Image 1 (cartoon, rainbow, N blue to C red):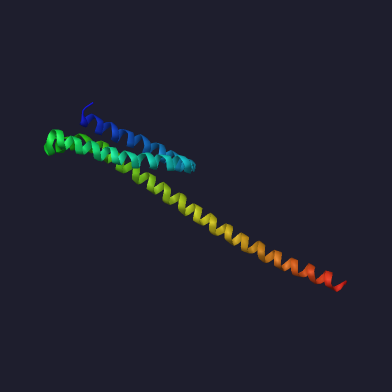
Image 2: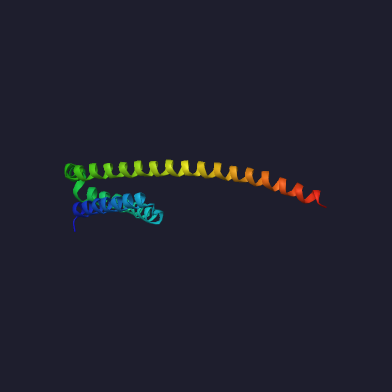
Length: 128
């Protein structure tokens, strides 16, 4: 396989992983999100090596001529990554809101517990 084909395949793999990551974000499947992000980090290294080999074997002009062919794929990847970022931001805000509500509920329950536990303690002491 030549370097250009390998580079395109790596970007298509990235696209697939980004789609899987987006579905996992929507499902709240954080294990899959983490796995996708790990695999994409590994892909970054492979992309750098492949691009370097392409430049060494065919020169900077060959790499530059590949760019128009990759532009559509790269634009799609950027769009998918932005969608995933937006989804993550929404999930995070939702989780922060839920956390705030849970904290308030916890405070309310502690206050109720203190109010009733003091009243019961006083009653027991009055019969002693």
